[in-house]
Amino acid sequence: MNDDQLLRYSRHILVDEIGIEAQQRFLDAHAVIVGAGGLGAPAAMYLAAAGVGKITLVDADTVDLTNLQRQIVHVTRSVGTLKVESAKQMLNALNPDVQIEALDLQADAAWLDANVPRASVVLDCSDNFATRHAINAACVAHGVPLVSGATLRFDGQISTFDFRSPDSPCYACVFPPDQAFEEVACSTIGVFAPTVGIIGAMQAAEALRVVGGFGETLAGRLMMLDSLRMEWNTMKIARQPDCPVCGAHDTHALNQTRCNCASAAASSAGS
Image (cartoon, rainbow, N blue to C red; front, side, top):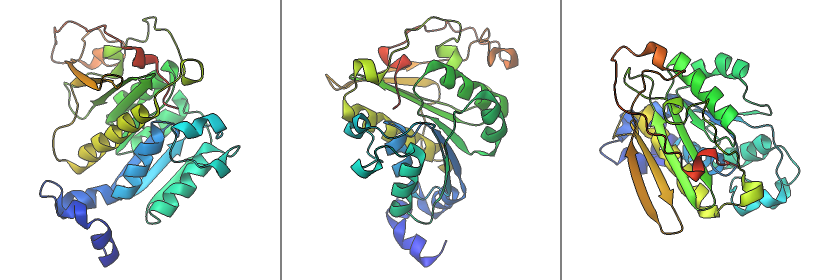
């Protein structure tokens, strides 16, 4: 770490639980963020500000005027441009030391299988179930920690699935891919802007704890936010032996009952 970095990150380094060791792990880390919208915007900005060495942004969408109500990484002049390029400009201005890889593409199963293994952590900031399950499957297959967030209207949810632990549940343990959920989007039902900021910032905090190796993440817990009443609920989640994604690898014969409580945010739009 050079003198400029020591000064830039000094307020992290002063925190006993972080220090120079965890800050160096931030600098050495590679975060993949799928979705450069409402959740991906604050998550990417906090990770860049914290000095995560490389951030890969994956999104095939362009900036629309309606995005600017909540997607704080974009500005008015970005309307009509690629979200990943708009976000890259903002993140480069925020911290030029961070390497930003901007990919204008859909994160399909093939891309995820090829690229998830090179990540330290993956942040799911996407806006549909198919992508969420594809990200989860790739992270399970390659043992890469996943931070999943979702928002809709006043509802938000977040959890961390840390596949470095053999006991970790996966996204499919909580929201089975064969279970019918109503797919809804911000474009049709709306979202309270600060809700995505809260959940996206928490995704960044989870990712930093994962790569920094300090504190306690949300692994094994699902947090749900009602920002209309500003109430939080936390639910314990466990790995399911019959999970179609991770159950085949279960060596601990966990017998907990699956919780099928999908909040409205489960099908939410990250953008």
